[in-house]
Image (cartoon, rainbow, N blue to C red; front, side, top):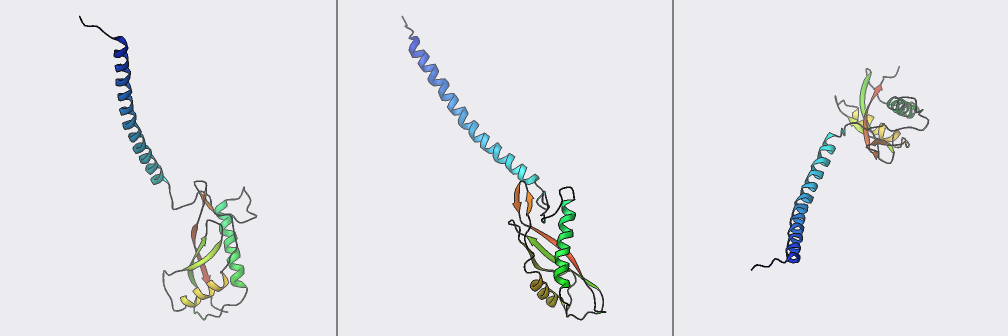
Length: 165
């Protein structure tokens, strides 16, 4: 006669179910990590890193005003004031345009970096030296924002150089 010990059977079933649950949860945890990693990668790849969510802001820019326009207007004004303070002693025959690279750090410091040479001329090194001297410290602004985080950003600004009259 076979005796059936219900308590041992119950213990065996509980142990078996627990083993299966642990095995499934380990695989499930690994799969969850892989899915989370893949989802994070997809979300990161979908972020457009070429433009900020919001442009840097000078003090005095009205919230109702277009932030991009206000930033560029103030930046051009600051640069123009610095360049008009003293005459520039460079002899040129005709009006020319150079492109200046301006950066705004993630802390908001605005500075001139260099000229972007689309069509290098003989006086580019003189203009670069002059811009470095006059635009060494353009002040501070509220930095650009990307995904809620302050980020550094760069801007290409055309500067028109006119011959003396």
